[in-house]
Image 1 (cartoon, one colour):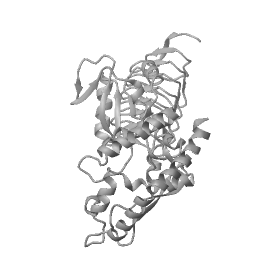
Image 2 (tube, helix red, strand yellow):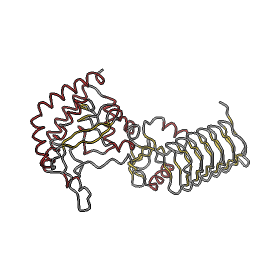
Image 3 (cartoon, helix red, strand yellow):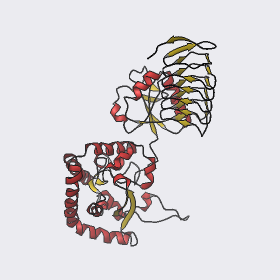
Image 4 (cartoon, one colour):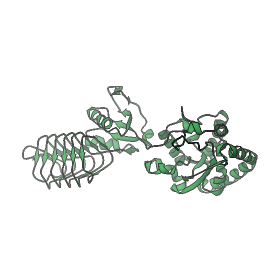
Length: 403
């Protein structure tokens, strides 16, 4: 009831009262910025709002449009005017947004509306910030504003979406007043404005064992993500490749993070994945050969010298280990592990949680069930049922348990 009825009513009333009381200040700043910015006191820009709908936000313009000799805009710090610096430090640049609140495309409290070109960079979790109207102030603003990193900002935004209430809004408004008075968190460290968002590039690895080392090497070689930490319930070391290992971590705090589970055992890997509510990433070693016509699921790890040919479909959280070959039209279910130098012929299908051992070979058109273990060096020349253990050349079933 508060979110859908009371909050919009309170927004309108408080915004109207606030704008009337601040009207003299509004007019004074408008005049000062008119002269400081060559007749341009306002900054109007398209921003995504509720459910991603685009609207025009209005703020006081705190930077001029000065350019260098090549016609490029100067840095933010160089274009920030004296009047603009004062207006920003006192947060008076937000006053015109009261008009956005009166119009109905913003709220007094909510996640700050960001740039439209960030939208395609959000993970599904981060995109939840658009489930409510954007606000003039918000939970992220009173917990660091521009002085915190992007991932923490998004985590705080989603926290607000999940816990929106009158008491939380009231708390945020009170803390906003305090932040304005002490001028805390206005700018990012060593910068006039926060650095642009380029996507969530940091990642956490779950697992500090032998396979964790291999996955870490792939991530560092791929150079696509920054490894922020390694998570392990019982690690023997405090660091791995100079990266800290976190022992007593809070899984809830992984919600807004990229993560990859680096556990070789299929069953354990699945058990851990199902306990995490996070954004799982896929990683491919630069020296692997993966067809652009192959389909790879999230959480899957493809190691150095592995080959994945066209039309292969690899599920989520699979491991295609060093030198392994997955031929054309193969179909691997989730949590499959293809060990080093194993080879799957064309059109092979493999069920969930199956292990294809080191150097094993599966001839084309074979169907292997789920929970199967194919021994090292085995050659599979016939279909294999669920829950079987096979070894030898040609492979023979030495253990089989029907569900």
